[in-house]
Amino acid sequence: MGRSAGVPPATYFLSYLSERAGGTPALQPVMGRLIPALCAAALVVVVTMPARAQGALPPGEGRDLMATACSQCHPLNVIRSMREGAEGWKRHVYNMVTRGAQLNAREADMVVAYLATNFGPTTPAASATPVALPGGPGKDLVEGRCTVCHDLERVASAKRQKSEWPTLVANMVGRGAVATPEEAEAISAYLASHFGGE
Image (tube, rainbow, N blue to C red; front, side):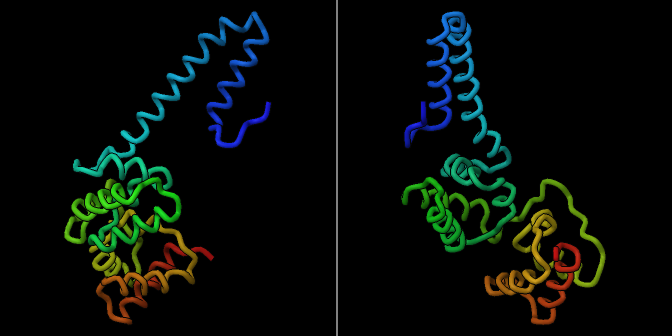
């Protein structure tokens, strides 16, 4: 039996098990108990995943939508560490919708409003775990400039090629990060040296 287009794999699997049980009388009682148990377990996982994903999110309209839609592809700590205004969040959310995030226009606007309210530029970034950056020239600049919008956990977990850091830092300056060209160069060199791959 082949899976038809549009049939979710779990539904196909359960149908397959049921069909197999129907062909073997000895398995029918076992499968009759196993299939509902599997369905219940799958339902528990589906229902609790978004709840766990939104653990440290502030309450508000749009929280559940955001937690469900965004956690399909991202760990929520990435989102919690970002700071954007309404236009910045709108750009991110609409970009994600074009990439497949399951939100209609009304829901996307609700998520943007939630994010701008709770993760706006004036909201302090709270790191779940304290991060100590390695010493070196540029460390003070990273701690002083990057943490205006990002927590150090995000800075330390961003793994880029060494050659990508100058472009990323220039992008942040273009978005409003305050750094002179010399400071941006020092930040890029520090990040490339400590968080850059070949």
